[in-house]
Image (tube, protein in one colour):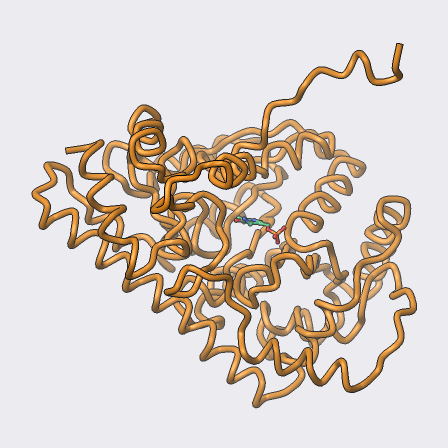
Length: 399
Ligand code: PMP
């Protein structure tokens, strides 16, 4: 017998598996709106011009390929943290934020999940619904994943009362995962007033707010504005943890660029936290890759390049917004019996369409349009050329 004869076939990944099915489909007008990766209006992957510029400069610098430290590139961590927390952030100025470079958002979530587990956390609370991968990431880190109410499918709106009630009822000291902006998959964020109420409950219950920031700049087009909630929590005195991904906003998906940081009470505490993060990283993947971090570092270290980045990121956000409007208008013009208002109310990369599982399957089988079974459509894959086709197909399966 082979060593592997007992290995059963695992099910395909719910999101990546979609792309595999899409690639096998030979229908000429097929559409992939499953995975959240930005496409330009011609449907092609997009490299930000400022990223190209930084890459060209890096090549000319003829850098070496030595290992980075366990915590990654110090300059990258420095600028990444300033990008999220803001230049005026008091804990940053007081040197009491521990930060490491991570294997993008996913890697940061996993490292922090493991550290939480090691230091006595048994559970983590995530919104219902949440990004599909959150659940296996934290489960594999040893945590039991519990859900708090977040979204009301019946009204396609935030279930804010449910959210507050649930946060009030969970055990004191629990870790609560919060999407910093552009909640995935629903595209619905709390207002700043609602964030304040969440912050107050977190204070009363001594909760540990853990922000997952995967779309900074993608939500409003303004990277500063998209960080407003997490910055408010820091100002309110929470010792937050934060995971940042540079996949979407910088278009560096495959380079795996991210950061994990923890706000501590004192510089000494931050140093001890940092040492524990490193203890976890070393036997896991030893140290992170260099190229993508160098790109982000170069851009965010230059005021001119940062401005270019902001403008180009805004360009992506605007294109997505225009597709939201076009999709909604077309569905309305077709005489849909449903309301599609939420498509333009939602922000970020996704439209949480409200389609049922059966409708999603029909969309795939009849119209060769691939989206996840929860009805989440990646707006980043919608273009001037396919938007009408998509609207007609959605209309056909939902009329
Ligand atoms: N968190 C959320 C909410 C996401 O949507 C994503 C990407 N889909 C990630 C984290 C992680 O992505 P990455 O590992 O590419 O940074």
